[in-house]
Length: 305
Image (tube, rainbow, N blue to C red):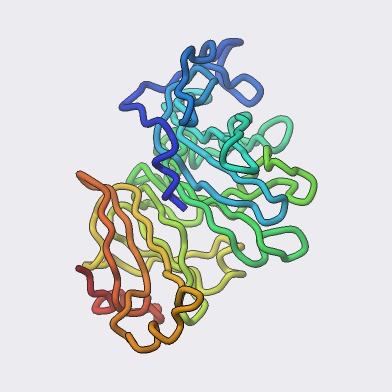
């Protein structure tokens, strides 16, 4: 889903604001300044007057038919340094509306008063989204956000690396058409002492879910139900994944309609997955053997060129 990174204006290193127009930044007060003048016509650009960078978890909601585009908005609650998750929506990729901040550092804003979440009180960094069975209303397909929360040891004693992984889901999926309100389930964090940039989880042939982080470490959830319950575990570091920014790993379709016979003739020489990382440039690497299918080994399953 990170292909949409080309859509959003990328602004360099920016200090997040803790003070918004009507006092300390908080749910209901998320404008850092006046809207930008002369905003680009063909790019999404926040009109909250805050700095912005990294698109996060762009995703199509199959429940309400809405396209969601999240991004790093440079504001923060309390003493956090930000950024948090800004939010755009569209139905056609042409006309967009900007919504309030979706995920705040240190707070679950889906309830009033907002619930304190000390495990991510510093910032909400770049994450990913997945559409999966069971995440929507009545067990239908729906969205789960996985993000790196930045922590400190004063407020979260288990915080050794400064980063952990957490999940966010719609607070009232059935009735909140634009998914304005996101909640952080009580099982959070899902993994402690990680690095940032979790990829969109992929599913192995055995039905296990896996994701990777910036440092090429791989994490697993044994099933969809385990993932929805926040039950993840560490698998290990893959020598085949590059340590780079904002990694992604996607399955390729089995064939293009009308070319099934050609695909069958190519056999196992065809790639099955694409992985994307951002180092000095964006690199696309073709994976020519099947994705991992067991939970004990993460090496010798990939060939790239």
